[in-house]
Length: 135
Image (cartoon, one colour):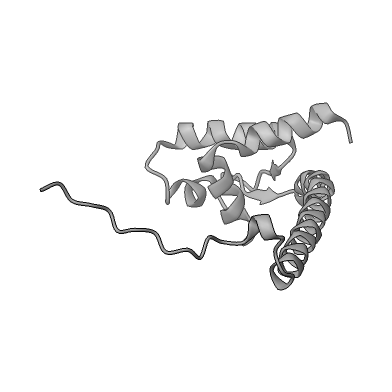
């Protein structure tokens, strides 16, 4: 997959209205009017969002007499998910390494706490005189 297409896909998904449209289309084919209902915007404004989604390859529109139903094209979403998956694996491995390192540090600290401290590291057990108050 070309990075250029990936950029187009993410650019289309950066808008919350377009993400809501994608979520709505995940439930099946919808008309432009049905897609516009949950949004406080005009049909031409929704049509602009649909055009961006269509040009990015995330949806397709067909003609059915006067109706222009829209449907999700999951292939582009899958490409984006596959790309993100590689980074998810990287971060999971990084967090696993960090967790192992922190466990080593904690184990080392527990081992040190169990040993006697060297003489210079012992807490001072001498009683200190109470501070004097001014007369």
